[in-house]
Amino acid sequence: MSVESGEKRDLQRKSVLTGFVSDKKTAISDDDHSGGWRASDKLLELLRRELKWSQTPEIFARKNSDTMPALKKLKQALVIVPWQDGTPMVYEILDRLVDIPVIVPPSYMLRNHGMPLKDKPWLVAKVDGALKPRCGNLSTGATS
Image (cartoon, rainbow, N blue to C red):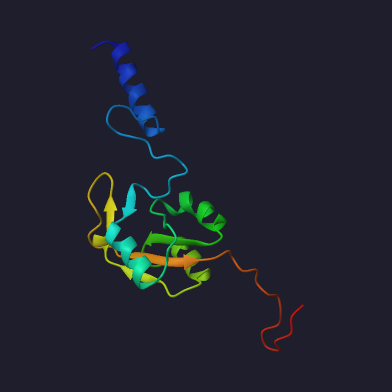
């Protein structure tokens, strides 16, 4: 093995870590926050028929640090996220609810590549823009 071939191998390894993926793997773009997940046709049908939610859902299944800026920019949307206690993403959604959220079993979510999560439910919620907090004294009810 020559030094040159070892350098090329290290360069390939570094390029994979920085997002340049080769061969059969495909890179996930920064605009895609779904992480390769999609809602099943059955779930979409149930949301439309039973809850009258006709919007196309936005799926956020990547790391919180990657998805929070995009989640905060949403005005009116139907969002689907993996349910995890105490994550900022779930708190952001709960703060902006406009309808009662729904927890769905993992069998309704499909993954484009890889195995599905079998033990994590998903939160489906209808959200609107963030409300501006009202400043005031809570004890007297006076506002400024």
